[in-house]
Length: 256
Image (cartoon, rainbow, N blue to C red):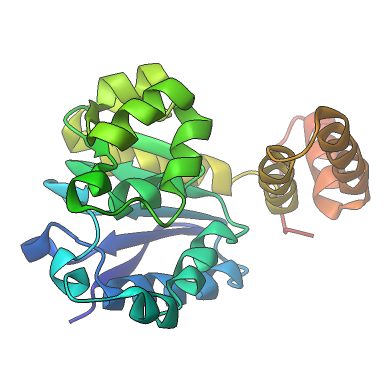
């Protein structure tokens, strides 16, 4: 049985559902490989303009599969090439929205933080408890959490395994939006549809510049922004958007 289910609930929107409810959607090697394959395919799917990833009502993903890691040593970890699985998500040019219900712990929290927007149900819980198992985050958790909420809050969570509620995560800047638990996926899909209705090249360039600029100096980041902004003036969608505004009609974007 597939551990990741692909749905197309709206025009230009893909929905990925983690499908290991018996293990609270723990990120087994098989699940990570399926995620990789889906993200690689969606990255090259011209019809896909936004991706929503979710779990189920009890858990977005409650971490890595501990049973699969218990007897693994450093050599096996390196040989697994898990970096390629995560790189497919981190390098995906399409906007990604995480719809988080229940637990998002360890690798599950890292997966949520790999998204561009996080919509959380009010009962969601976020954390990086790897230290309790004698290990540490290995898929960006120490770096993305620190960039999202700052050194001191991140250190508290990373060094003690403390968790954050959805409300605390929103206040700290980790979560984009908090909604009722039964509206999490609905709200994420609504955002995805709104993004998918925008000019695809402009959306892709905004994502590219935001991510590239985060690790650059302000002057370099502004240069990247300026060049991308100028290049968008050569697109068909820019002409369509501006002419539709002048003509008081709804634009139709082709992604060119």
